[in-house]
Length: 421
Image (cartoon, rainbow, N blue to C red; front, side):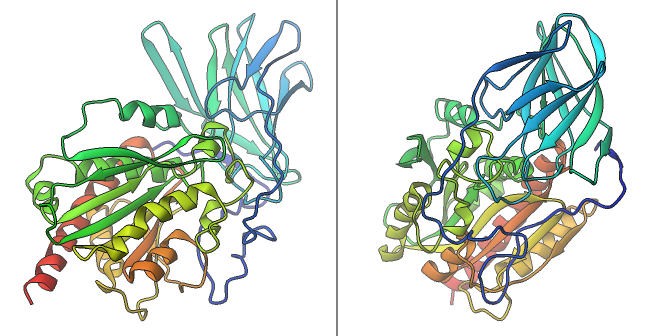
């Protein structure tokens, strides 16, 4: 995995998702985060902007882009302005833009964030003919006075995408395209509702259980926060393993149904939002009041399980990303059914991925986040599974695959224990 060399005056502080005993907002949350009634947002204007002579061009006219303005500062330095969908906002400044020029040369790019500070290591991707090229910017200068980041880049007439994370296979269009593939016969895809901009909220169901037979349900969520791509990639590998043809997965699906909502916030993903949906709301603070169409849709899709005598939610996972690999379990003393799945599973995940540093931090069930709604509604255990921002695609794939295998093994054993007594 490539690591960025940051030239710093003071350390950059990165914030994860965690809890407090009396929830009025986490310590990193902006004021009013639990007020999930629609707020005013400022959509970015999609356009091509040119600056300098000879011209350098930038564009945000593609899915997942985030670029708000572009200026020339001096002969070699150009500034990209990145603004959030609304503010105040958690410090997750996503950016993605195309850049090209009439005359190939090296320049310095400065990323200036409004209402935020630099967080994500710049990635560069381009395509020429049938060949694709990608790399990570290894040296970035971070300005502690304004939170901006500067780096050198060579540009040409061939457009390159510079982004906070590589965009390959993580867009909403990629997810839609997946629904048109030859999925296994036991996988179905349904639209359970629509986002604020009328995009389908997709539910993927893997079900090989016998009709009307007893079945456990595993609930998976991802991309409530659009920039949290490494968590999404881990989810993708996790899902692929659950739906694979291995002996373990086949055995698991005899007694377990999987309900997955891969992109909970499609508008945020499409529009390159830092954190919120199109209504300016952090969806992972709306699992109590359900003011937003995305959370409403998933709630209404899952609630029938509660009155289904043959089904029981066994576990829930909400995939996120932060600056480290971390489990946020429900406090061990809180009784769930089955009990303390996360604490037992985390031990195995850490053993199976010894090269990755994993930590766990328990917290209470007072906050209005998805994990706690699963517990309050179904009495089951659930976890917020945070993946390191810098985990590359191969590491995310390995983590997701290993984690799925160990969880299936654990849940099968739990099923046998509970149903043979």
